[in-house]
Image (cartoon, rainbow, N blue to C red; front, side, top):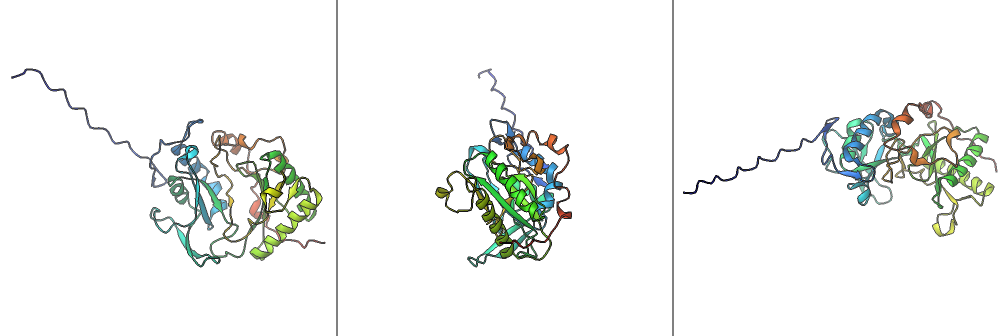
Length: 307
């Protein structure tokens, strides 16, 4: 008989523990969502867990739309609003009938940290929110302007934002700007109860018309991208049930992992690089206070616009 001993069998592979965050078991926590920056899925989960109390002010009781990017910067993104199945127990949804199609859509309803983390675990990087709450879908509590620079330059959006502020200040309307997380600028106006979605949209469209009239070389309201000719599109159509804007404090699937960041108007400067506010640097931003802290204390009625 041979005296040689058989090599010992390798020890069984140890199962990698999957972390739990706010009661949600995180799958593939080490998946690299931003390879160039070394940002993993777990990094994004932990960022949202820290920011959840701030973000909840903008998601609570609102239907959400998830921008899912399961492979981060290496893959494709898609929007999902219908979640009939696949969510952990305790994540609230609401069946809402779409007026355009008659189809029932099971929207996730925001507000809890667990809900937020459950969405991120499904690959949701940016959370998009409506301007209304679940029990008052036709009663918006904010108005949104989406200033989209066709040039791709934030400087153009900032100039359009300053013009918008001048017009709104002239009407004694208080407004709050934020970066979109891309190259655009979002401006929100807190509203008192009363106006319908249609009335709010009409007001936003009229303000856009005034902007384009005052600065025709800078701002346009035309829907056709080909006809915008490098100008900033003043998009008033965010103001309708089913339409959304990215929530404040949402991470965007862009290089450097920028965050949609509330700003003071004094910070809306053509020289600002919105990517400076990103997942890696945002703790420093939070140390400076919240320029939108009084947003819900400033609810207001929309004034009449004189022709």
